[in-house]
Length: 308
Image 1: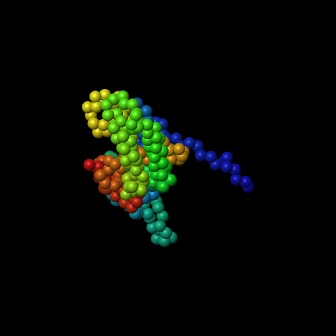
Image 2 (image 1 turned 120 degrees about the vertical axis):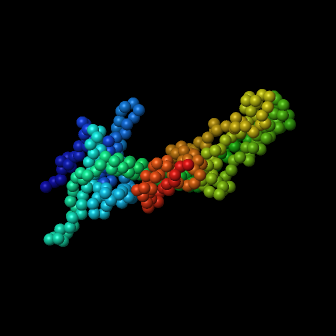
Image 3 (image 1 turned 120 degrees about the horizontal axis):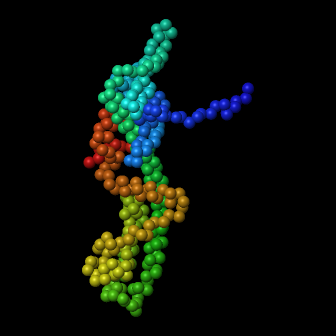
């Protein structure tokens, strides 16, 4: 007999329309479905596949009344009508066959407070799974950005732009160059000297990350004409104010892959600069929940720290 794939087609899974699920947790499949509401009053459903480690941590970190080695959670849901259900399975030993089997049953002693506690724990596991995946994605992006080809390209772009600025202003410091305002020539010399000083190579930094942070914070000095337009009376010393520096000329990477990751790298670098210690800072409430159920146990991808 020939296998016909058309005989085995899954229809789209539909959630109950009368009493839609607020949360549904399938512990065996490590799947969580959450109802997400928006200010407009609309909602949709978010699906989260818990990582094996986070799912294991959740089941082992919950109080024994919810789950333990011999009496584990199978499924838990809460519906919008206020109903909730916990399904478990207990390990039973058959003395005749000398075999152990899992017997599924509905746990009917779950109180409302316990349901809320279980909801909070599952929601925290979802948040942690998303955070770990995002952190790993950003770490991968950083590792890609730290490769020599990326760093060298950023440096070459800066040097090229620096060279063009210097060449186009060579005539500004000639003895017979005209001046349109007092000390203009001296300001051009100062500007050109600053251009030479501010462009640094990756080798001048202790780490690739330090260089990336330098690039993120990098600004070009505005030339004397731009400075004069801002402050005709020169009341503020040249290059001593933020308004004398420009971020308009960004490093414009030409490789498509580099262009795609550049924005993400910059966003991540901004996060790194704001961290007082390595790790993912989170609110005290979320931090306490994670620690309460040991959800971050054996997670090598991310370090959880309490935000100040």
